[in-house]
Image (cartoon, rainbow, N blue to C red; front, side, top):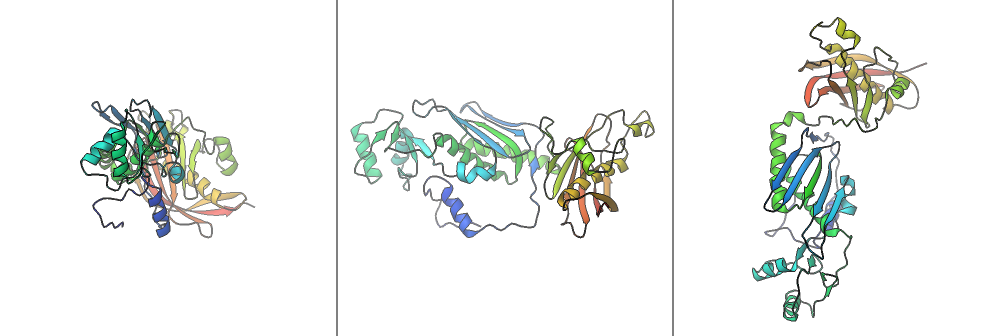
Length: 370
């Protein structure tokens, strides 16, 4: 909860760095709940031909942003900025101040606005010739003896980054897209963004998520990326071999979550006897593929050594979609609770694209090999 006693948030230094400092002073408490990310499986785009704005959200395994600006100004030329991880927001984006052009500043002053504005909390771009009379007026507004112009900026301003304006536009995108209300895994590419366009774009993303809410935290698979484990590496960890090794590679691995890939082909041995003429992957083998994936997750969390995993219990299994030749199964396993005394309790989900095909709760025991 954030409380303010005015009609709008104070500008302070024109960036978001002071707010990060305040939040850090208040303290951050990590909660026990798992953060749910929403994924998209198609591009979401917004266009405004009048403003020449183009914004697109592209499916991605992470949340990242690329912003491009072009005001057709000799002072503020085309710029771009990127944010590959929100971990870098505090240092690379938050300190970047808002900016405006001199003609916009004069309009605001004429309408008795920006009373908290100062040359220290905004970058003012001088995009036209300025008379001595105008400079005197600006000095009076900002309580200065005199105002100066240096390299196209008001009052010898020193930029915090060479592309500070583009970074601030990216900062705006972070804030405006937070209005979506859901954390999204996507690559946002924004050309000539602005607050009103950002908000319209946020509405489109929110509508998509509400319509496809069942797709929350669906694994994203990019076959071009190097796997975390390839098949040869998995064989060093698991005792399974062809034809019973049912995982082709591991594409994501953390302390509590793993995602594996199984490419289902028509030459699989089990299709010869399972619904000939209408081949369907047996549900028990889907669960086995999940178990093998979960085995790597659990073994990875154990002290050094060789381990085997044994089923103790399978509960709440549901099969919702058929898996057929040509499908690529994404096998997601998540720890429901920490591993204790070698007992692993996991929830598994099988996806093909963004469709949930099977799920269940699996309990296994880790036993160290002699």
